[in-house]
Image: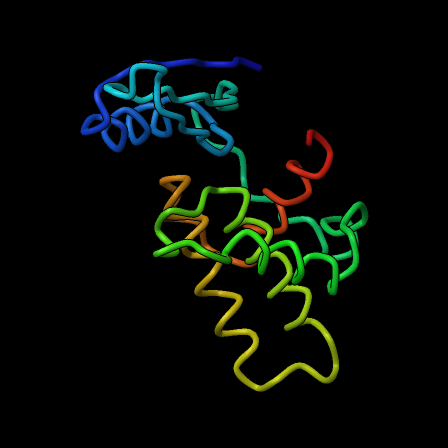
Length: 155
């Protein structure tokens, strides 16, 4: 397991992330501005591929992914509080989108979920994948479960 920190020009973050994703089995990319605000800091957990090939995706079950999650009501409250006063959702960070996608996934899993709950959960999951430069994940909701389970264990 590797922990990689990169400081680069903000315009290079996508290229750097894609290159690392091709070379290593990477976790989510955490991005922050440098203190001077001119460059970006990228933090990435990575591991070597097995036999030169990516390991197959193993998505956790919802029960495994959300074992450490607060209640759905609590998560709805948290995401609402984070969004209040923001001029645009674009200003919200990865944690917001991950928690929002996870709570929408949990709602979609309930028996009395609205008919479009699954679609809304997928759209939020795609936003997390976009932030992580993981456009090729085969199951967006599975990806969110995997990332949420990891986040919940390490927060």
